[in-house]
Length: 231
Image (cartoon, rainbow, N blue to C red):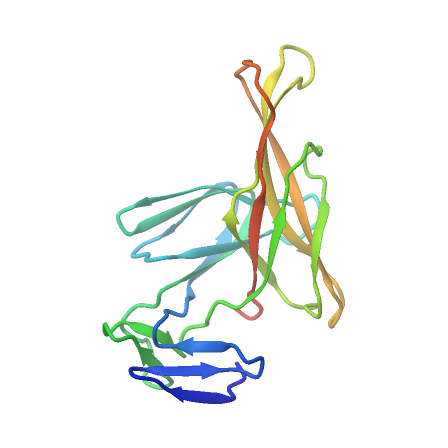
């Protein structure tokens, strides 16, 4: 964070950077890293005592065919569950708890007494937003949907803000037509330091048994790119 100024507000503190945008504001919570891990095999990621969490994932590093995607998000009280398809690394960002693990650093409180910012937590660093429309590509076929300039050598994960999918009645091999479900995942393709990273959409097909006919349906997806370098 490059700090270039402070503002004396009625209650709290504002800090903005060299880009002219506010980075810390006592009126808003700064979502920060509260959990991370590595999921092997499809399954659920769980967060207890969640408030407004954002889960960012990236498929296991490997060939282009690797894909991981969020199939659903559910809650039970303050416990959150992300149902994931595929192996992935994940980072969860949320409102930080009221107690700090360290005795040094900077804390900014909201007027209700909750922590808006705590320097002992790593903040969520958004570096891009990408929209894409799913199509009838074969499973694990990549489609470039954008670039991240100047992010070469960085580790980028993606949080799904709007799921992309399509439903299509079509024949799958021999037999009666079945309902094909396409789920979209996103990843970046590595580049040398200082170069652009390619952002790609990938699809995984699932064959379901229903054979009723109907029009093809789809929903465009949106993913938030988050810099997780060093986290």
